Image 1: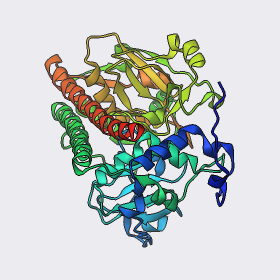
Image 2: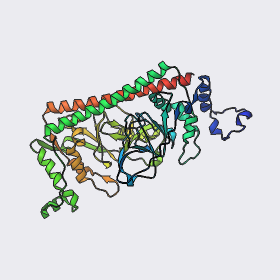
Image 3: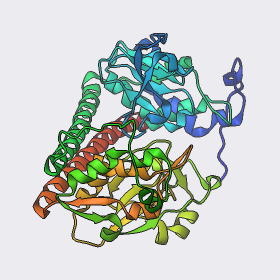
Image 4: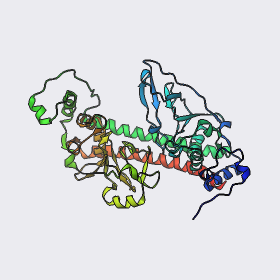
Length: 445
């Protein structure tokens, strides 16, 4: 069926755009609804503070890049950088209650609410920084993540390779404020979601601390030795000659946990690698294609999420769709991130991810935590090679040594991990509810 819009000549007079894409019916409908709601420009309730960042030698700062924004929760990972090493795009100082919005590819919906009060937090030039003045920061955050507003921002882009908008484009976008009770309801959901995300991390750290305590590693300190002596037989057995591989710290941690039974990961699980269909198959929507960047120890993260067509998905799903209860384990780029799949998903995993299926009597949550802990990570750090991109080979994965604690302790640790994932899931649900309420208000005008 042909989609078309009828535009009056008067609407084009003085217009900066005459391309048909700009006047798609779905865009015009959103604008019509916002007119009915008497929405006002964002610059009437928020400003761009333009706090220019000037790096100083030997002064550290914390940096937010667009690629580190979780598109579903707005969480972000910061990089610790010394002033003289600041990238050119580290340009804007951000403060508590600022809302930052990616101006590059706005359809990706990279929006974050700054919750922490930090004097050394800086974001990329690819963000527009908004300081709310007459609107709740939580409401502005959700509003800018709502589908109708994301579509309006995407409408303003012109380039095909790197579509982008300006900060003024965002400030000129209209916002529906509703009444105070409506905004307060949205704010409360965001605050509750933030609490759930914090609770999720707290529970996970509790599980880590319990594991280290039971393994006798609570006070373990990693020390780098400047020199050490090896036997030739050790080099032959390892089939490695790089000095880093033989650092004594790797032996020390295994010695610390040897009082417990150690099992090889390959004896505890069966393994199967994911699949790479090729970037030409990537889409902006469709069926999930889960890559290494989409997995964290806390669960799935929505970072630059890619999708596959339903046709490709149907062809691959029998062999490459993970099952509930399996552990997803990254082996490339950032090797050694393990996550237990708690619920069914429809999607394909990439070749940089292994699916681990439990075949012995061990708690999956406990096993994943062991891999994510210092015990697993130090072994992975020793084994993984690759001058540009790290690779952890399947044979090395099978030889990862796992300490086996008594079953009741395993269950207690696994329960904390499970509760952590449940809290994160609830946070996502709350944010989706808040976003949907805003979307419904705009759609129904």
